Image: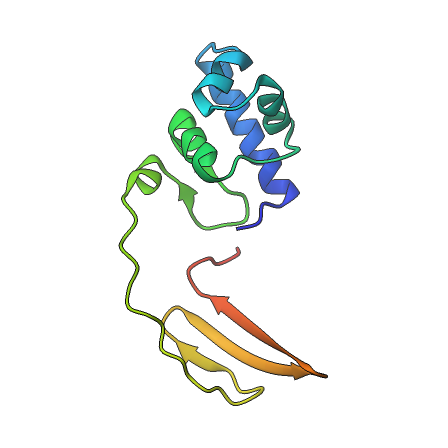
Length: 129
């Protein structure tokens, strides 16, 4: 997921609010997240958002992060669930050009643009409001 400016600012505000509520200093939050104090400042200003394990640590610190524009919240339970083992290898299928094809969890449409091909996938799990 690519974080938009709106999401970065929201995550930063939630981190700052949680830090102030816990009466922690930016240095203490930096130690919890495993980043520098300068990076905490950038998070809180909404310049960037934590990613990967730092995002999981931020979710644990705050107790859950709301993502504006999405119908779900990043919760502690979600980041602490073990990831399932990868499934079987994907089956290769031939798709007709321009005709949307339904697959579990996605709609795929293949189009040709000059000498290149573009594949559009719409994943139904993340719905914008």
